[in-house]
Length: 234
Image 1 (spheres, one colour):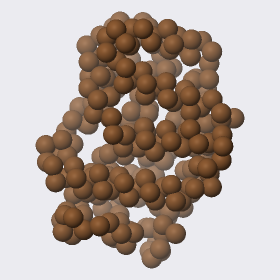
Image 2 (image 1 turned 180 degrees about the horizontal axis):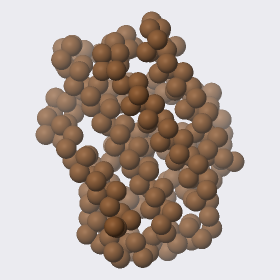
Image 3 (image 1 turned 180 degrees about the vertical axis):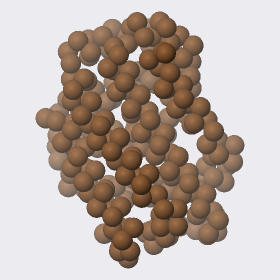
């Protein structure tokens, strides 16, 4: 089986999302993502503002979570699948696995937030400004606790993989050697997605620690939501 087969499966899931063909869901999804980003920035302000964490925090919020250019990235991944045999000879296996984990996380975040967006459209007028209470009630109604915990577990695994594989001089050298090919065959968005990840890691002593500090707080919020705390986001 191709090492890139999992990416193909993820793309199929991504293109089945309803927001691609239903503008009202897309609009509400964007509202949900904006609320989520603002909430995460507020919740993790101290963690994200530390000098060595700033680039990774930005990567988290703008690349791994609901990035505006993810459609373009998905299109380039789809094209890459046509050249899977050649790509696997160039891209180190551990880089493929780690990159796939990042894509899986990004898609899972969109899947979960689309569910929230659809439920909000059922329960409230389409242009109602989102509030913490609306989101709390919607999370409870959808009972996403286990799915959100899975999301955090995948994120923890990604943190370990980033430290284990992506700090390798050999991997980074091989990655840089792909730049001319990426430009030639119009895979710039994909290359930049990975390049930004490498750059975000440089100031960190440990990507794993950055991630686990983040996920520990997020697990606490999930627990508060599902244990009935009326103010879980504060």
